[in-house]
Amino acid sequence: MDKMKIVVLVSGNGTDLQSVIDAVESGYIENSEIVLVISSKADAYALTRAAIHGIETKIFAKEDYDDIRDRMDAIYEALDMESPDLIVLAGYLSILPPALIKKYEGRIINIHPALLPKYGGKDAYGMNVHRAVIAAGEKESGATVHYVDEGIDTGKIILQEKVPVLPDDTPEKLRDRILEVEHRILPEAIRQIEKGRTE
Image 1 (cartoon, helix red, strand yellow):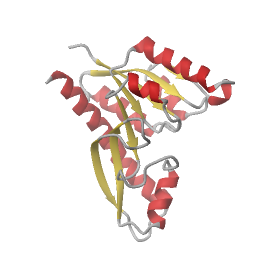
Image 2 (cartoon, one colour):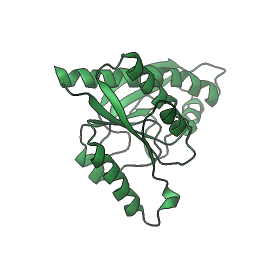
Image 3 (spheres, one colour):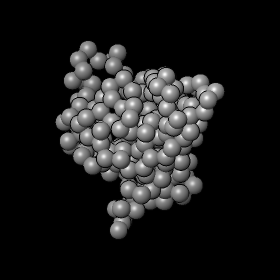
Image 4 (spheres, helix red, strand yellow):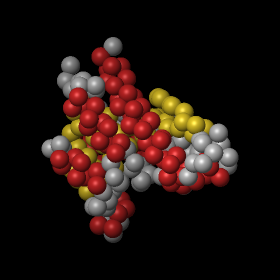
């Protein structure tokens, strides 16, 4: 069977992207290739990570487009050129339009730094999530890999792993421990999807 073609969408440092790159290169994800990394920000370090590994990159920054529809058309075009089997949102901070989600239904996954359905939704990203978890006095948090549907963080859950919230946790400390989980379960979710294609 042909390799599963993955496009990864990023906005920041790209540690989740790195975990997928490492899993592909080590053979943990054995029959997939990352064909493109798309960033919503020109200064995202994830772009450097991709370049180091010889992966093609494209930037579609909001400030480069007068009309959001032109930006989405450009993203559509980039995706269509690759015909990805899987689109991975790895710290991507833009909401995908319903038409794109519909077109790639069942082929888009996202990594979220909390135990969905708790702490999901419009403003639940990055440090906002960890601050909210600590402020609420939660005893545990974690990370979730889920399919993307037309809601925000509402798609079917693929994998979840819990992390205890410690009494002396700061949002930064909690983030760092949850990132370790993200770097495990995102490649594992892709590996499961890959296996599902061959069964």
